[in-house]
Image 1 (cartoon, protein in one colour):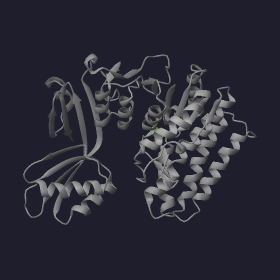
Image 2 (image 1 turned 90 degrees about the vertical axis):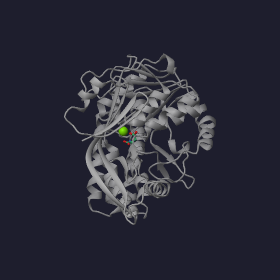
Image 3 (image 1 turned 60 degrees about the horizontal axis):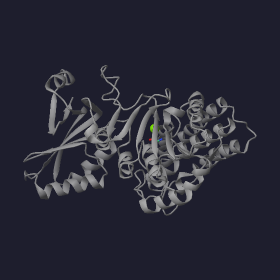
Image 4 (image 1 turned 180 degrees about the vertical axis):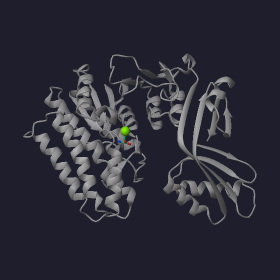
Length: 419
Ligand code: ASP
Ligand code: MG
């Protein structure tokens, strides 16, 4: 049994959807679960729609129509027959969303966000499933929310592994054994039957959750790149593809910001020793990158992972007290309350410095939270680079004319923040 994940770029228009069909033709007769993300940049559009709905702004109607016409174009390009039952299902979904936008919005924005934004994956999986069936690749559409059960942390659902594993192994597995199944990434459901998403770019994680429960023989993430690269080829012309990498190295790379694999994906796979392939949907016969070899067999080139749009916050106490246990505990509590993720931190006697993604709303909230006792300085527009197996020569080249604001070493990994 194999789990295939197709991301937004692989279904961004009708041609791309047809290409997914071509890739799948190579696997007819095998036991396959297809996990698909929202088409192209739909999630971003739906985020705007969710906000407009929440604020009851009139723009919600235009935003809805934009999303609908984007999908209508793809449906037309795929020539899905308008009198088929599946076509009606897709039409009905749009009516359902349109009607939902007329209800008075809940007070909890994160909850609304998940109910609206999750339509992206429902649309894409319905359309893909219908197209595949009409072109002879028989499959069954299934709702991922029946299997992935989470708590109620909207926008960042925590998986209830026990229930989820039981549902996938007992209910989904027998179906995949009989027929190809098409389902969604990114979404699950809580015990109150509300949709909960797993965090942006979470479809890779969904694929890993399904693979875990199905005890799949492998997972493939189909991308528009040849595999996992050692650096961003748009920034470093010497970037090369990594042929094979161990689970721990892949976790580190993803955690530090390599965007090819979602950071939460690897651990469930590692715990069941399920290999993960990252392959190009444009060259499906190419070997791509294999994640899951023994660390001792690894021969990794120096890797450079860049995270742009970073902010440094310098936090110091207003009463000049040192930043030790007591202050640190208050500061960390504020970070947890505001759900702010720290990418790198450094503390000295009188200040605590953190490097974060520039998420304005969360940072403003954090400032409010800490204002009672701390003053905060902000430095924006920075880049965080994580370089493994580095040497002095390539480091100079990477930094160039920029100022080095923070530098931290752990083993052969170096992290720097530059402006
Ligand atoms: N569609 C979601 C997003 O864009 C999930 C994913 O693509 O993995 O964040
Ligand atoms: Mg995506």
